[in-house]
Image 1 (cartoon, helix red, strand yellow):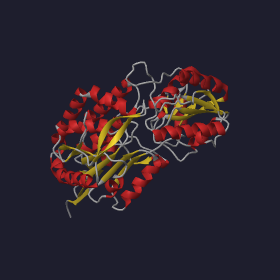
Image 2 (cartoon, helix red, strand yellow):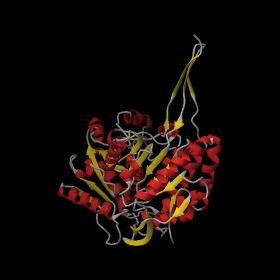
Image 3 (cartoon, helix red, strand yellow):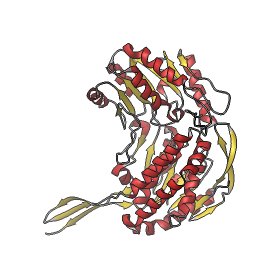
Image 4 (cartoon, one colour):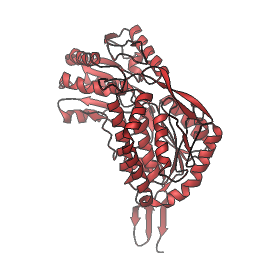
Amino acid sequence: MSYHLLIDGRLVEGASTLDVIDPTRATVFAQSPRADAAQAEQAIAAAKRAQRDWATLGYDGRRPYLERMAEAMTAHRDRIAETLTRERGGPIADCRVEVERATAAIRHFAGQRLEDRVVRETAQELIVEQRYPQGVVVAIMPWNRPMTLLAFKFGPALITGNTLIVKPAPSTPLSTLLLGEIAAEIFPPGVVQTLVDANDLGTLLTSHRDVAHVSFTGSTPTGKKVLGAAAGTLKRFTLELGGNDAAIVLDDADPEWAADRIFASAMINAGQVCYAAKRVYAPRRLFHAVAGALARRAAAAVLGDGLDPATTMGPLQNRMQYEKVLEFIASARAEGGTFLTGGEPTGQGYFIRPAIVTGLPDSARLVREEQFGPVLPVQVYDDLDEAILQANDTEYGLGGTIWTGDVRRGIAIAGRIETGTIWVNQHMSLPFDVPFGGAKQSGVGLQNGIEGLEDVTQLPVLNARLAA
């Protein structure tokens, strides 16, 4: 099957190609078009030309385009999901859910709008907050959740009147290119475009004077580079970056119940989710019960081809991440960690058996850093205040969870966690009408909710003197 870039309303070949690896087998299974700097310049120019007319349509005029996009994604769900399974790994059921959630997000944002807000209206003066689109938005995507994370950018940027250039991760470009094929039949030329690179066009896009906003999801180190590139033109930006989310088990929780939910929150997409639980803190009284229950679930995971319905966990998505997780495993062993189960490569593809690790010092790399893989440290605590201090003692602040038999107690403790989102007795609940974003080095700006729409618009304040 051949794939194409979408530039100025046309599906075109790339200036060259790049290999796309199936992480289940660690072999090439497809070729993706690769854009060069000239094609990136063409896309930026087309987006700038198209933006004024797109903005002029207004919310009611733009809404049908997004609704048609959602309808077309529903019609092509299985095709997109199968492509997603091949390029990112993971069970096909999970990939279908990702496509469905992305579709639902675009459908939701199609119906949103930002209204003028009257700040003050008297006989003498009228002060109104208004909103207008910023212009050309560049969405730079990660490889772990290509569809849902794109939808959180796609919907708000377009419905508010911006035009959009999407740059997927080089290791997972194909599902995004399929969305480009769909968009080519729906949107006016230049409104939606797709560019694939080998991580060599990022600086051009993020520093270009005709790009108004960069929305980036990815690692904190790369996010800092994006921020530096955007600074030259003082362009607006949204950064959703890394996390080291703590799961705190309270002493009134049922260990089996908590372990079931923590394991699901930690091992989703083989641990390759920014909001996944990255470390567990359990009270000494429940520690062995919680750790043992997590280990049993890890040992029962079925690793395999995502197209096999029996598979419950896929591979790491790429060789670099695979080798990084192996380094975490080696460091955990060297720092005295006890592996209750897992931690071994399977010998095929980029698979690592899910691991539960105990006995690490709080200074251990696996505890301090974001592993982004199926290796979960479980730490013991004797004092809840100390556990909260440990949870907050990190440069990250994306998410976290509290697990308890007393939800009101959990809510009170959640208020002490320094993070953008904190869940109590649930995980990964991200309603489209509720904003999310990171604290500390986990990001800047917000996505979803009205705040996510505001993030890609400019706020002018109308201040009129009505009478002398």
